[in-house]
Structure formats: structure tokens, C-alpha cells
Length: 626
Image (cartoon, rainbow, N blue to C red; front, side, top):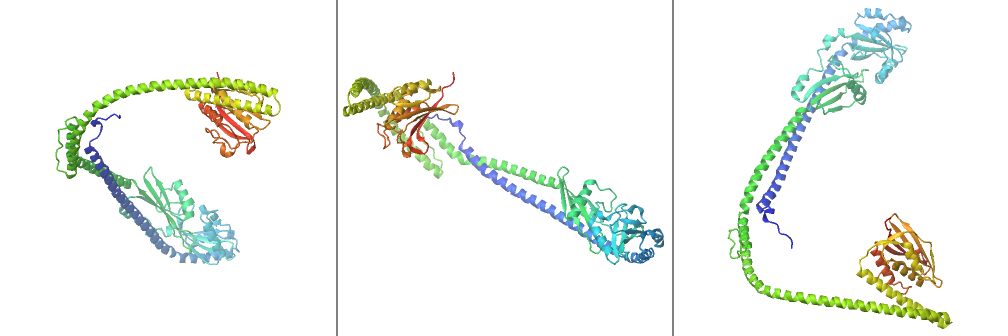
């Protein structure tokens, strides 16, 4: 009978009902809070992305507008430079095409001193100039610009450039180019910044910086860089990493780039503003660096999450309180019924279940009252039957004891008869075997043949008796396994068949078995003798099978065993159609193998060639070393 738990070990129905309500409400509240949080988070993210888009669009349009104005102003200087090139070309013609004979300093003074003169050779190197810092400057290091210079040199027209920064001094200059008639050189003029700086400074790229920061509170800093990685309209030097990024990645790819700094909670966007104009050799494209501070965004999202968690917890606590009150109210009638049932269970069968007024519970109350009334009648009947059962049990115990004694006596007597019969039959078989051997030795012809058949029949009878005795020993005695010398057991059984040729090389293996082990090998040798042909030949081989087992194979040269019979031949009274016998020998062998924790199976002596004989293989456990 299973032990019964005390009621205190279980939760009340009110608690279960409250837990069920909470398990429904909590996920619903959590899900609603999560959906609302995701929606607000998405809304904040979209707001930030929209602000970012407006900011980047505004700065890009502003730069394009300012660049258009600067381009218009730069164009106003072209006429002056075109006029100066006429005198520059005359000087080149007077020199006979030898730039070294041109007095560039005198030409500069003739032009009013506001222009520097340059002569660029075919390799793109400034070979002669009035501006010493640029002497020897090699434009081939900027392949795209160098290609434009070659096109100018090979052409015949004046080419004006924009106001750009000198790569060595950083000064702003207005440049223009003119090819020499022999296309060996490019003549270059550069108006120094003092000539136009005041007028040109009216237009600036950074005028709307503060307006953009007021529109986008997450915008922390704005910087604009040219293709050399230098800052526009700021004197601070560009750090090496930023310069490498701009000159090595952004300008070659001509695409935007983004860097996320999680440690400082910033996102830096690099916008490539394509200002390249096919009418000018210099690329005026710029890179705008916009640094956004994500800390404020993260704080807003964290605040939203905190508020949602707080609201969800308060809602859960409120719902838990409501669930407790509802559960107590709903289970109060059930608690009354439970109290009434407890009184009835304590033995007060006269106590009636109170009426709660709830329709479903009224049916339960009536059913319990009906059941209690039935219990009254049943208990009375049980009391009447109890005495009868007690008396019957007393008589039954005496009868069982008497029958058990009779069965034990009958069993002992049957075993005595079986032992006497086995002993007497064995003695009779021994005498019959002796006379049949004498008769076989003295008789000839048909008589000798009958004598041999008689001896075989007597041996078969002895084998049957031995198998029966073995089966009794297996069934009546639990195995006590000890180390057994396998070689002695096999050789002793070989000597039981003096007229049979058996190949055996011996072994030093010891196995876990008992005194019945010899019966395995006697039955296997006897089975092989029966089916090995007119000149029976049997081989016994012992082999190692891993570290803990040995395998003993008993092989014959008989007709073999059909594949369908190899698994059934060890069943009781099952025989191969080509073999005769009682079907007990191999069954006993399997029982003994199981007894020793081993296994036996039938096989072909030559794998895959049944007709060349059968092999019985027994796997036995090795005895531990002493």
C-alpha cells in the first residue's frame, strides 16, 4: 500500500487557482509591455534616422550651393589669367622653346606680382617656377590629375582651374594652364590668395554648423576635408588615422563610410560629396565628417525600458492581489465541503455535507451524502463478513501448510525414483556396452555390424541420461563460478572418444566455470562425431578474443548447417533436417554458455562454404590472474 501524504504537503485549490491566474496574467502583461517598448524604441530609432537624414541632406546641399557660388567667383578670374597667358606664350616663343631662357621673375613683375608662374614638363614635374616651395613637385603621385594634365598638354586650349590649396604650403591659389605650341610643356599661372581672399571669404561651408546642431541634438561635431585630408576652414591639423581613412579609403571608393565607437558612444559618418567637374582638372570633392553622440539615444531607450519594467511590475503586483482575492472568494464553498468531508473521514458518518447554493457543487454535495449512506450499509455487511473471512483464513493456512508438506515429500520421492532409475539404467548400459564390445570384437559380417549399432544405441542412451542429469543440475543449483583449467577439461573429453581422430594443440587459458563445463565439449564433440562422415575428423582450436575472453571452436567435416538453422539449432528439440538426434545436446550447451556469461553460435568451417563442414564457436570469460 502506498503511503498517504498529509494534507499540509499539498497546496490548496485557492493557491492553484491563484497561480493559474498569475501564469496567464504575467505573460500577457509582459507581452503587452514588450510590444509597447519595441514600438517606442522603433519610433525613437526612426526619429534619430530621420534627423540624421535631414542633417546629412542639409549639409550636402549647403556644400553644393557654396561650391556653386565659389565656382562662379573663380570663373571671374579667368579673363585676367587668359590675358596673362598671351604674354607667357610670347616669352616661350622668344626663348626658342627653351624654358631656361625665360625670365620668369621679370614676367611675374610685369603681371603685377600677384601671379606665380610654373612650367610643367612631360613627366608632370614642375621644372621651373617663381614659387620656390613647388619646384620639383611631381603631379604623377595623383594619377587622375596627372592624366588631366597630359590631356591639357596635348591640346591647344586655355584651361582654367578652381581655387585650390597648394599641396606643399596649404595656401589657396587660383590656377590656370596653357599648353605650349610644341606640346612639350604646360605653362601654369597661379594667382596668390591675397588677390582674391577677401571677396572669396564671403562664401563659407561652415555657416550652418550651429543651425544643424540645433536641429539635430545628437550631432556633436562637423568637419569638412578635402582630397588631401586637410580640414576646410579650420586650422587644426588632421590626425593621421583620419587622414589615412579619407585619402586611402573614402576618396578612392568615392562612397560614404561609418565608424562606430562603442566605448565613447559615438557614431561618425563620413559623407562623400562629389563636386568633380569635367571642365576643371582639379577634383573639388569633399568629405563631411559628422559625429553623432549615441549616449543620449541610449539614455532615452534605457529610460523607456525602465519605465516599462516598473509599470509592468506594478501591474503584476496589482493583478496578483486581485488574483488572490478572486481565488479565495471562488474556493470558499469548496473549502466548506472539504471541512465536512474531513469530519466524515474522521469517522463521523452521521455528519451531512452543507448546502452551498452553487449548482455544480450541489450535485457534488448530494453525491457525497449518497455515498456516505452507502458506506453505512457496506460497513455493516463487511463486519458480518469479517468473521467468516477470519475463520476461513485460519483453515486455509492449515491446508496450505499440509499441501506444501505433501508436495515436498512427493518431490523428494520423485527425485529418489529418478536417481535410482538413472543409476540402474547407467549400470545396465555399462553391462550392455561391455557385452556389445565383446560381441563386436568376436563377430564378423552382419553380426559385427549389428553389434556396432547396438553399442551406438547404448552410448546414445547414456548421453541422454547425462544430458538429463546436466539439466537437473542447471535448474536445481545456482552457479558458483571458479577458475577452471580449460586444457584439462578439453583433453579429458577427448579421451572419452578413443576411436575418434581429434586435432587439438592445447592451451594455457583459464576460464570462469564450474564442474559442468566438460558437458559443453562432450556434447560438441559427440555432435561432430555423428555428422563428420564415414571417417570423422574433428578439430578443436582455442584462440584469444580480446583481453577478457577466449573462443573455443569445434569443427567437423560433415555436411554443414543450413543458414536458416544456424540460429534455431540451439533451441530445445529443434534439429536440422540433415541431422538426427534428440535436440537436447546443443540446447544444453547453450544453457551452460549462458550460465557462464558466454555465448555460442554455429558457423561454417570455411566461411561461405557450408558443404565443407560446420563449426561451433563458444566464447567464454577468462578467469582473473592469481
